[in-house]
Length: 634
Figure 1 (cartoon, rainbow, N blue to C red):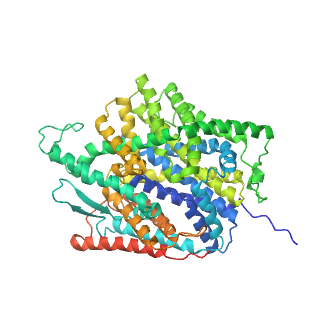
Figure 2: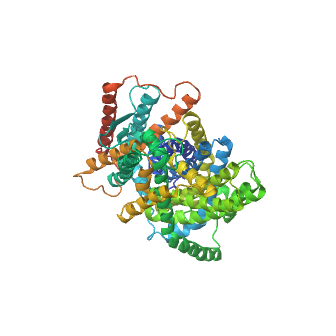
Figure 3: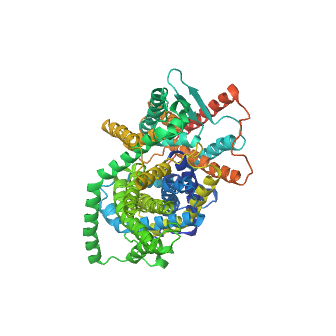
C-alpha cells in the first residue's frame, strides 16, 4: 500500500485567510464591545468561513489548515476585548491616544499573554485533558471534523453578514427609519420601555441563549423600571441638588440624566463587585495552578524536550503534536514586553517619570503573568464567555492606582499611565484564554502546538493594527460614553481609577450596586451578566433578550442536537454580529470623512416609521429561526 502523505498544516493560504478573517472579526468585536461590553468568540465562524472560502476558490483545506486559519483569525478577539475595555477611557478624559500607541499596547499585551501561556500548555491542555474540558476548544474541534466536506455553514454566515450590514446601513447611512422603539409608561416617573434595532445584539442573544440573555435584561429592567423611577419619585420634592450632582435638581432631569448621575455609579459598583468576587473565587485555582506549573516544568526540563526550528515550523513537514515554541521565545517575549514598557516612554504615554514607568512595567508583568495562569485555567472549565476579564482588569487597576495614590501621583498623566497598564493585562489574560481554547482544539485534531503559537503571534501582529484603527475611527465619529457607543467597560474602568486616585467615589451608590450583584449571586445567577444589565440601558439589552427568545422558540419541542451536529442558527447569528460590526466601522469612517452626517431625522417617521422598524425586527428574528431550523449536512 502507498503510504498516505502527511496533512498540510502551516501554509501561506491558511495564514493569509486567517489574517483576513482576524481583521474582520477584530473590527466587529471592537464595535460590539463598545456597544454592550461583550465580545464573541471567532473560532467556529472562522473555521466555517475558511472551509467555505477555500471551496469557493476551488481549493481544499485539510483539517489542520482550517485549524491553523481559525487559530490565526481568532487572535483578534482577545486584542479587541482588552483594548475596548480600557482605551476609550482615555478619550473620555480628553486624551486621544496616538494610533501607534494603541497598536503597541495591543501587540505587547498579545505577546505577553502568548509567551506566558506556552509553559502552561502541557499541564493544562494535555495532562489536564480529563479535568479541563475547554468547551469552546472542544466544540471547535467537533466543528472542524463536521465541516471538512461542507460549505452550507459558510452560506449561513455570509447571509447573516449581509443582513446585519444591510440593516445598519439603512439606519445609519440612508436614515430610512427610526433605530429604536420606545414607550413611556404611565404612573412610574421617567420609566421607559425601549428596544434598539440592532441585528448584532439579536445575534448575541441567540448565541447566549434564553437563560443568559434573560439575566442580562433582568438587570436592565431593574435599572429602567425600578431605580430610575424611584430616584425620580424620591427626588421630585427636593429643593437642592442630590449628591453627586451639584447643579441640577432631580426634578429637572430626564431618565438619561438620572442614569448618568446616579444609576451609572450603581451599575459600576455592580460590575466591579461581580468581577472582584469572581477573581476571589478563583484564588485557590490560581495558587494550585502556579504550584502545579512549577512541578511540571521541573519534570519537563529534566526530560529535555526538543523544540522545532523556524524552518521546520513553516515547512509542510508532518505535524509534531508535542512540540511548543522554545523557552527562548517565552523568556524573550516576556522580556520584550517588560523592557519596552519600562524604557520606551511612548508605551504608557509621555510625561511619566522613569520611576512611574518602572512601576507600570512591573505591574504589567506581575499582574499579566499572574492572571494569564488564572485565565488559562478558568476558561478550561467555564469557557471564554465566562472569563472574568473585567474583574482581572479592575484588580490590576486598583493595585497600580493604589501605589500611585500612595506616592501622591494623581495628575492626568498618572491616570493615563495606570489605565494603560490595565490594557496590557486585560489583553494578556484574554489572549491566554483564547490560545488555550485553540491549543485544545489542536490537541484534539492532532495539530502542532508550536505552529499554532506562531500563528497566534502572526495574527496578533496584524490584528493589532486593525483593532486600533477600528477604535480610532469609532472614537472620532461617535464620542465614547454616548448613546451610540456607551463603551460600558471603559467607562467603568475610568470611574474606578478616578475614584481610587481622588478618593471621591459616591460609595453609597457603588455599594448599592454591589448589594444588587450579591443578591443575584445568592439567587444562583451569573453576577457579572446581571451587573452588566444593571449598567447598560434597556434599549441595548432588550434586543439581546429577543435573540434569546428566538433561540428558545426554535428549540422548543426539538430533540437536542447530537455531538458533532452544527447549530446553523449560531452561524447565522455570528454572521449578523460580524456584518453589523463591519458596517458600523464603515459608517464611522464615512462620518469621520464628513461623507455622511452623524445623525438626522428618519426619512420614514411617525407610525409608519415605527411599523417599518418593527418589520425589520420581525425579519431578523425570522431569518434566525429559519436558519436554526436548517439541517446542515455533515
